[in-house]
Length: 115
Length: 134
View 1 (cartoon, rainbow over the protein chains, first blue to last red):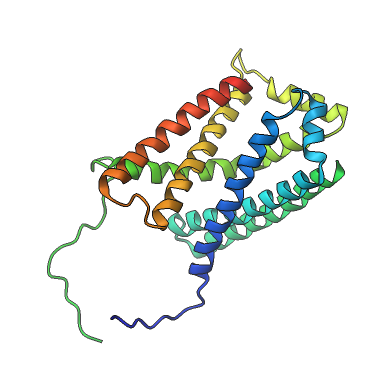
View 2: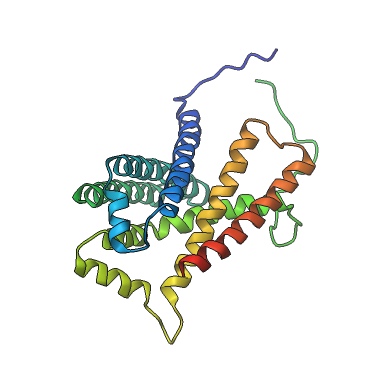
């Protein structure tokens, strides 16, 4: 048996796991969303609004978007780490990505709880 | 630490335009490309959701943007069709990766077949859903 000395902050494993957990949440929501959409009584803007206005859909949609933003953070950060070699440019891109996603989170919360 | 000496020259880089990649490689590359594309257009997509659930004026802006054409080409709808494919490819390829993680379908033949299925299912679903929503 190979005994490896595991060192580091373990954030690699944490992000790897988070990427899969958030993906599963989004995949489940996609099914719920599709079922809700197909069972709409009529295809009007009023029915579309009513679909998101329900307490469960608000809760599920919010979870979907939070999962999406975390998922996007890990994925986009990986892209910057792979292709952007300049430390200063990479750090700037990381910060911009993070700020944009946090802003989106506030925007989505406002969209959902205004209904 | 033991000294390590390279015994044979290893390839310094692989030219993606010259090597022949297997189908799963294209699934993987497009998984990243589709994810990047979805991220780039994420703000626009949230804006569309906002407008579709907003006031009467916002909803009018939503239908205006959706129906926007440039020289007769429904450019916004075409972008949304591309994003629909991106989502469906990312979704199908993601499920395939989750199954590979738990060691389902890791043999060469089944991995190749599932890569083919990812392309088939996501492209057919894009055409069906895109056609229904157009």
